[in-house]
Image (cartoon, rainbow, N blue to C red; front, side, top):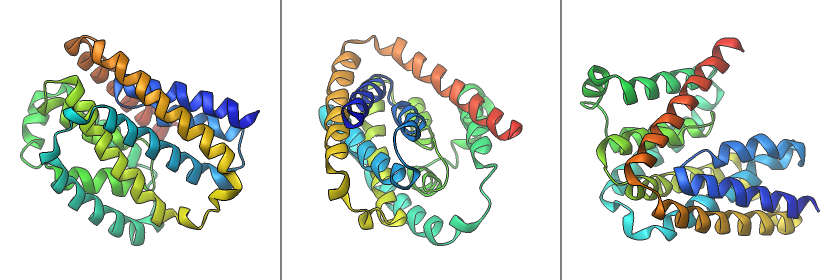
Length: 238
């Protein structure tokens, strides 16, 4: 019964992410501790989100801006290696607040946006999103905020962001030792959650393709703003 219920939850959260480009993974990992022991949450969540993001990318394949991939991939590999072996043991308590502040300024402050654009590149975004994603949550919006500034199509933004997030989730597998996690012990759970995630990506993509382009970009910016404020508040009050 738990496997079916989590499969349905994965479908719902993946549908949300399929429409707006993010948020599904954060909802899912917030719900999973109610049903699963802590020891398997990270590998199960990582594999489920890999399926969700990769399928969302596949369903929007014609919209992916592949020219950004090589730079992001180089940055991701560097982030995985350096953060995985160096920063993992350092205090990261204030990183979510820094990410939140960056998102707010990047989205709404034109002087900051113009200034940071001199340094913003996909090598750096890959490094930060994948590297910091190993130790803090909600780094996917880093690339989403940059893509939202550079692209005018909601479908290109979300499809390319899904590609980037797939790479970032893939990097978690060797770093967290998820390959040592015995998937056969949880094959039923993983099957339901992965199938639910893929179906959710399909439904979310269909809904997004019918949505108004400019309205959805505005919604994405609004949700990114709320997420950024939440990240800052959580650090300040914890």
